[in-house]
Length: 328
Image (cartoon, rainbow, N blue to C red):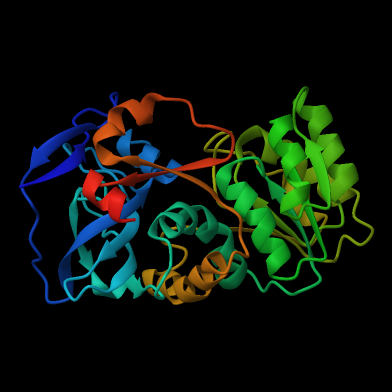
């Protein structure tokens, strides 16, 4: 038996319960001791049934990635298989093909906190577009955890200008320290915000979009119509849908400019493609090239922490046991 966070209703926070320990069933699987697992937005949508990969199957153990100790003692970062047995547990069955070993001395909490929010923009810029150093990037939804990472990653990979756009003014103000050259407030009237975006970001080469919905819909034409050369390609990478699952794409956007709309996420990038990017991203995080504000809690506090408001920019990481927390 082991302790785990269990979701029994999509309307309630997970509860800390004693459950059967899972067992490997394939030759590529092993049982690991989970040292740290992050509470990402993706985990919350998994636990409330709203993610596009979610099924209606309950109960489930949430958690989509983590740092674990392999049977041979090696630490590894891993992404959980798409099952109801996630990483918010003392032990988890992992597929070794979806894991990479960690360098000695790496902080498991730091890796668990940073990998998921960093992965979306890192993989998008490496796998979904032909990003070149010197290009300009707009991060739409830059005040979220993934958006803050995207600002840093775009700059790290050589963007000549990074524009961060979001609603939370306090978080917007913090983006300059992360590498943003320009910030744009999306607060207030949506059409006025779209106009501000068009004025500030019409010359970008790439949009990394975590919002979608009305903000994306309204911003497309202002960005495109004010470009000095509409034949120069603008690639819009759709990653998140915080502002809504749908957006009406104006037909003029596709006809009057060299406008490319792509998505990046599970399915558009293979599992092997994600895993291939893990080592370089882990190196960047462990070398301190990406800032992350992590805060850890024992997994036994999952219900309490789940319902508590997060601090600004904090990335919550759960530690499966008090003993493991002390060891770290």
